[in-house]
Length: 592
Image (cartoon, rainbow, N blue to C red; front, side, top):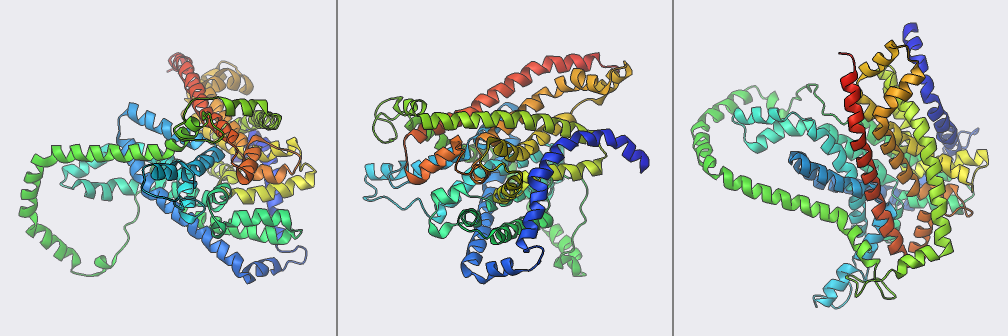
């Protein structure tokens, strides 16, 4: 044990900056939030009792859990076949489809919500089309109801489900399916008995992430739902602004957190992205408990043997046609899912060029008036510049401390690495409203409410988690022999890191920086709590305009935000492509 701590101490030291920021801004405030909910030092359950005694609170809590569960089930139902078809496609097509999913994932949540408002609104794209073709005479109620909220939640959360599933499915050995088919298993049987159990880690991780994130949804239900579709996060935010009783707000936040923690503890969260290869114990079902069930089953299988042989021979001649139709159906399904993810963004981009006084699709002409309105309005310009300043500061801070933490964790004992990783990733796995409330408490103690420094610290705890995840994945593929070779030539730890390790993990560092910037640039909930009335970022400006008036200028802003992920992906691709020759030279020069 002493030797373990001696070997791990330098590596753990690299995680201290990230852990210190997390502790001050989020960790200690979470403890204060817990104590406040119990009215410390009195330690009573009065706040929880008051929450339970209000039927309206219980109704909001139950419908929050219900809406999150339904959205998660829809994401699983749509996301699993989508991920399966993407993983089974060719490498070039797979890369393109994953790129589309990533673009949708990186696109601003506010921009996507605004796009759905334009599509589902009373004078939106769908209603206007149906009226123009004469199918309806008055607008259909497509917005401000539960269905619209589900559409918005699934459209936003579907990439969160698909990406972990693809990561797991790509790693499954395809020879296992071939072996099952060679032993007489039908395609569905081979899928059910072999492929599906191996893909369950992805289903589990994606479902937990989607459910927990849906619990903290704030913008989408408020923009697309009605009064009866209020979620607990909206209730908590309103409670914090209108009530001086912080204890009731703390109790509501911790009840929401308790639901998330119960789900995580029951289902588990595997962020490794690899299929589990550990054999699972076979559960005894009621059929196994019957003493003669196995004999009867074997006898029935023997009787059905000749019939199956005839069916197998008949299917051989129909395999080509069946496979052709299945490919067409699969391609159509994936195309519809990609259209569902990307079409709202394309609609906003096209409508932003409308020449009239209101947005129309398709535009009767082309005009840049709303872009001129955006760049010529001082309020929009100031909000954008504020977001850029905060985003750059958050990117620099979180990239430095996140990269150091990832490097330190990669050289730490596995069990300790798992614990510290989960601690650092806490802000991006908890409901966002809970993180916002805790961060608000922490920054109140530091006197940083209503300051840019406070917003930077609040954004950095989540951005650091993204940097740690991406850089750690890059470090996992790093050849450690290169570092050993540099140390054998009397290079110190710092020189080895700067001259060998950092150039090889540069794409991961840049990728983490991109995610950090986008996380900060699109943040609304925490910013609205921490920024007060003195700081107005671009997302806050957009949200205020969406709530009070549908200013067409928002379409120009949303279209720019939707093009931002494409620009960042191009930067990442160029960075990765340029890093390949350097990595290849380093591997070739490494001692064998």
